[in-house]
Structures are given as C-alpha cells and as structure tokens.
Image (tube, rainbow, N blue to C red; front, side, top):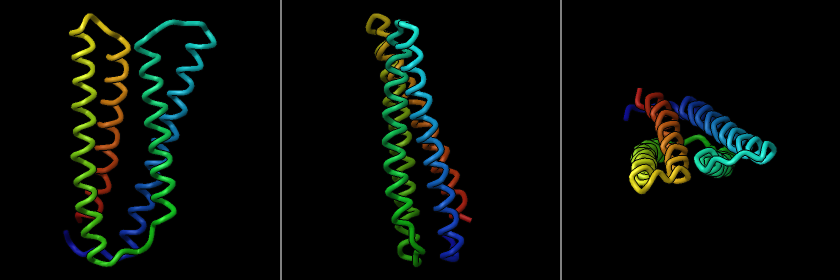
Length: 145
C-alpha cells in the first residue's frame, strides 16, 4: 500500500461510511416498503416476503455498523492505515462468501421443490454481497493509489 496522507484517507473513509449509510438506509426502506406492500394488499408471495425480510434486516445491520464506524473515525497513522487495508480485504472475502451463500440458497431452494421463500432469501443475500463488495472495492481502489 502506498502512503496516503491521513486527512485524505480520513476523507475516503468518511465517504465510504456515508455510502454504507445510504445503502443500509435504502435497503431498510426498500425491504420494509416491500413487506408493507405485501401486507396492505394482502398479497401472498413467499419469495417477495423473504426477499423483503432479508433486505430490511441486512439494511438495518449495515446502518448500525456504519453509524458505529462513523463515530469512531479518526486520522490514521501508517500502521493503522495498513490494518484498515487488510481489514478491507477481509471484508471483501466475506462479501464473496455472502454472494456464494445467497446463490447456494437460491439453488437449494429451487432444487428442493421450488421453495420460493428460500429463493427470495438467497437472492437478497446475494444482492447484499454484491453491493457490499462493490462499496468495499471502491474504497480499496481509493486507498491503494
């Protein structure tokens, strides 16, 4: 990792946390709106219900994580910047795992008799994995310059 000035790194981290807050808030809003739409219209869809539940739950967790992260942002020295870089690559590995778990749920749900609730949950997990990976890759690209 090339050396980056502490204020530039802090600005990149702040932007990353803001993007996480926006993604988490959007996910929570979309998931909750989908569940409300199903409930108000008395619609039945296991796929949409599980997609909405997973999307809202992941969004809420991302909001909590981003809020805690935002409160603890401070300028970093070189050792702390190196730890951030390594943590970021660990998170990218976890994001890939989320995608694989989601795809496994989709394939399993489909293979086990078209269990659409499982398919919906898997799709939501896969979407979250891809989105988080993109957000983490964006930060990794910024701090790797």
